[in-house]
Image (cartoon, rainbow, N blue to C red; front, side):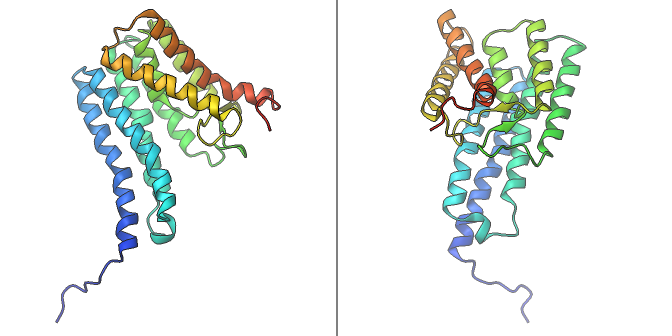
Length: 241
């Protein structure tokens, strides 16, 4: 009598499930980030977030390459991806902002609450993408926003203003850029992303003690990525072929 009915697992299923494991590894990177933030090691925390962002950037193309949805139809990669994204893009940055004391009590508590609640609602929006693959509304990339606030050593007023505006924009039909999938100005957009990432890595290597030109370049490239979606929305001929 057999207690367990073993069957050979096809290689295609093993390969597809390994992509889910890759995606899920972002949760452990987020956990390491929580530990670092709780100990006020914010440079380490952002390194972990950077690795999580790298995983998030490569798991989708790999999943499409190995046809994960077809091979494992009972496992939702989209649900898994949203869970990891919420933790790494929203929850951990909100915790870091609160822990840093950048805004100060009690507004830091209010700011963190605004971030996590508005973002949870945004993830439930089934129409967050436009036909051109822009995000409709601020796409809750709080990891990038909070990182920028750390790099520029923002004042409490500046930080609270940025948080409030971004939360407000989450629910407005203003386009925000997806730098890879949006075709308009794609070479320029990707170049700006590269500049932002390079200067961001430099900021971490320097423990946020950067020369003014690097801070200005980092903030300027971030503002471009923040605003260009809305600009392209209001000027539909710009970058069109």
